[in-house]
Image 1 (cartoon, rainbow, N blue to C red):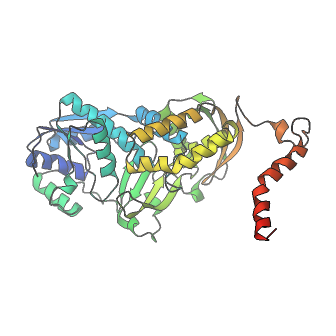
Image 2 (image 1 turned 90 degrees about the vertical axis):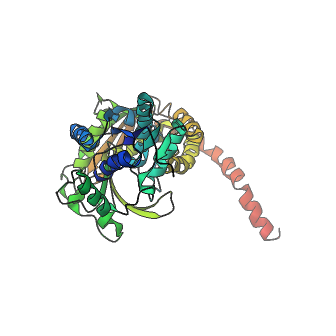
Image 3 (image 1 turned 120 degrees about the vertical axis):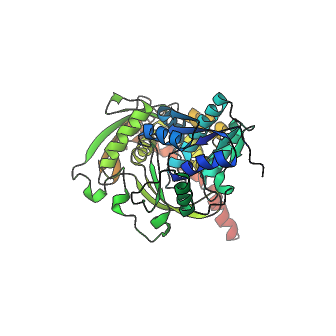
Length: 402
């Protein structure tokens, strides 16, 4: 394999893996390295990341604030679709990867780089998500995936290499699992969580209180939506990132949003993941509640039939594809009337819809009432039922030889 690149943009986090990769790139490829860090709301002090990258040998460091773009252009489109993978996972890590990859490609173009590099392992989904995005956005750039190239077998090898090369290695006790965080969620995988019988330790969770420790008094909130997008909390207009950040705090305080699942990775293996998605959990419930009074039945049912496929596109890494874009256009068309307000009750891990209203509601109390004979003639239901039951009557009669 030819190992040469003049200038590489590395998706850099400052952790052990990408710090080793930075040094390895310079030694193995002889390249200039631009350490690129995307701020998608991981809650870290990124000035320290910049300093560490430079100290490790980066020629340039680019830190890009993607928080608003991430929520507005990736999270909200997915939530307009009520996207959920295998009925439980709200795609927190999956949906961040195309946002990061797009910004990384833009940095590469700005610097005239000829290669892109990521730190995803050869066993997971992220390698696919990053590389499919790279190919869709800038196919002429070389892709470097160190975990599929180098001789290192595991983290102990990386630690030893880091010590040999003078790369700072944290001396604090390592968490016995891996973490990925952004504004939508935190994921926990690996280590002690690889045993699906093992209950996650309570001290692991960072965004949510245990439902047992959540307040004994329920919290009520109102979420305003326009064309399927959340725009306000309790009447206060907020930007996409600010709204999700605020909702994470409110829902997390009430113990909402924990999920513990064994999911099917795209590469073929099963993986146990534990997720905290407090704000996203509430937003999905609110969105579906508003759709219940604003969306036509057949349109809703057609859209719902496509949710598993749409979620797979995101999970598998096919965000920048014609099929996802076409499906998104349909979904967005379906959201034109999803405008209104939803009132929710948050209590000890539960989020319950207690009210919904819309200026374009299709719910008509006069029609729903059993007293409204002048609007809906109940006698007409006889013919409706008989026509719909014709095939059932025919089947029975033929079976009996009539």
